[in-house]
Amino acid sequence: RLKYQMLGRVKPQLTELLLGFFDVIDEPLLTVFDFQELELLMCGLPEIDVEDWQENTEYTGEFTTLGGKHPVCKWFWEVVQGYDQEYRARLLQFATGTSGVPSGGFAILQGPDRDSINKFTINGVSMGNNHFPRAHTCFNRIDLPVYSEKSTMKKKLTVALEMAATGFDIE
Image (cartoon, rainbow, N blue to C red; front, top):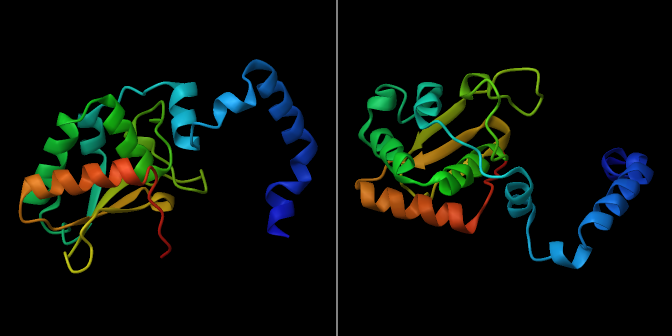
């Protein structure tokens, strides 16, 4: 039933769209790209304003009390500032499922229902078994372990961005 709802009922339209797309770009040329790379190729790298992103971020979990003043959150934003636009786009894609910034900026970042604002959230989690950041794309949230060193956080975050282009977890 779900397969029909998502694909079956629009199969004729999808088929025509793909045929037209493949008239422009040969299908074998696309097989080397995953969907995130294809999005970046077709849409280009967005210009991501880190200050706007930071100003429109909420903090939960271990970061609730100090918010953006927590040392790990400060390190996070320093690392993001140091990233080039490609890695910023990867981070945004990892945490939200898309590399695009809304035209009105991060203040109007939406959730999966597209009817409500769902701001980017950094959720502090204890180290425990969580050595790498995790993302919950439906909530525009990244779970960031409370690292003891900035260099460790940068390394783990960068590896997460290179290995898993979008984070996904079930709550």
